[in-house]
Image 1 (tube, rainbow, N blue to C red):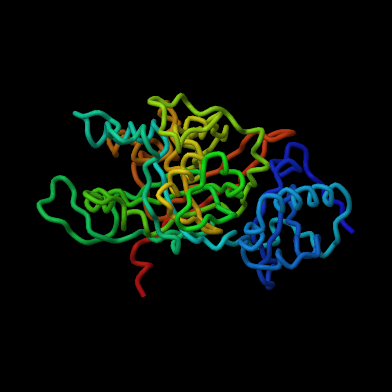
Image 2 (cartoon, rainbow, N blue to C red):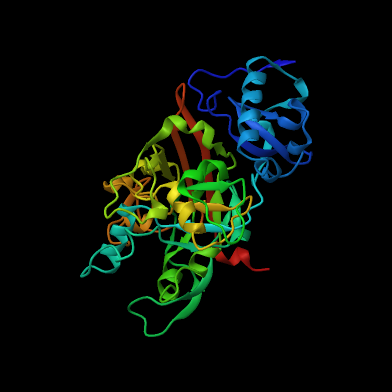
Length: 393
């Protein structure tokens, strides 16, 4: 038997217990939970075949009461001795995509981000579109290109047309960007023709992950009028391997910013809440931004309510993301198009002036939040840019 040591100040203590899918080298993937610097194989530790699978979907579909029960069992287990065969060092395993992603929706829930882009693209008009404070704006993305942290990102190609070009051309993206976001994973589905209310959020959503919604800004700028993002977004979205349960985020709840005008009834909450999550964005090893999730205008529950209000079903494994997280200060902007003001105000990265991503660049997004006993962590979402030519076979 093994007693798991949790280092003092660990972001992965008993008040976190995030789930993920891992594999010891040479073995099949299975579900585990991170405790300190260890991963516990839940199929072995709990003697439960629902965890002997390559995704969390089957467990998440069992519902809220089961999530509470298993979390309590894990906490009790790791306070004592765990079977030797169930314990692995984090550095000794491979981490995989934690869920089979059913659908992917990306929102636009930061007023600071939306206002900054409005000022950039429409300097002579109101920053926010007329609908923005009435509903959580979003678009439907591509589930098949959601990848786990550590997956290299090939620079996309497509049509682009700069303002000084007479006609569009085809080629590699010239303005490759990031979006630092938080994603929410649906565990319990909803039926077609029904809506999920804001009060039912916690019975449906299992947990949260970090998201980097890579963005080809020049491709996006040419294609998104009149229908919206398509190829400029669909080539890759990275998520962190650890899913932090909502049950671990109770201490991180904070009120949302004041919402005015008052949302329509289906978007109202008795106590609108957001999350006090502090993100960090590193560009080639240098921190360039610290986006604060607590500044997000629309709450996670409001986003799910809006996503289903027309009767659209939700499925186990659905991922919906917050959109870029930005705060009121320049060093709190969660996308490089904002941070460099459309490329006009370069930032210095390791002594070099930079605007958008170059081949070989690596971006790492991490985050922490208040837990019941200290701060808890989300781990990281990491991605490195490969040249467009490497995508050709």
